[in-house]
Length: 120
Image (cartoon, rainbow, N blue to C red; front, side):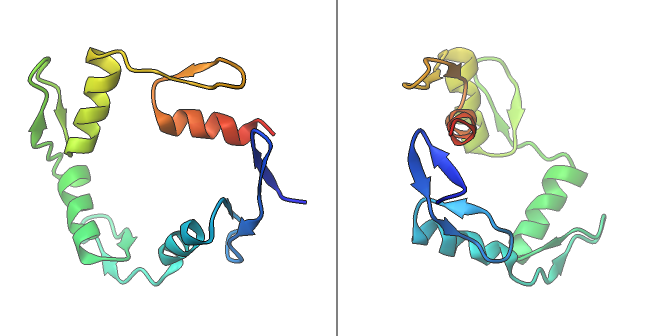
């Protein structure tokens, strides 16, 4: 018996390190990388990262408040294009993601997936 279900679909693949469950073996392999040794440290707060570029990105975004991407419609600023695109979809285009099982509506796919995981 699996620990999690997504609207009736069993999740039988899990991480031995943290007991998190996954739909596919490839998603588990990708996840396991995050349990690797975090050798790169932020020189401001000491948080450690798997890769130096992540430590540098963290420092720019968190400690230097670098938000280089600007929305042309409302001038709000973002750390990257992904966050700008999510903002545009939700705020300016009104995109929503419905659960086809219960008809509840979410602003992001992430929130929909979290909801679906809880519904077992």
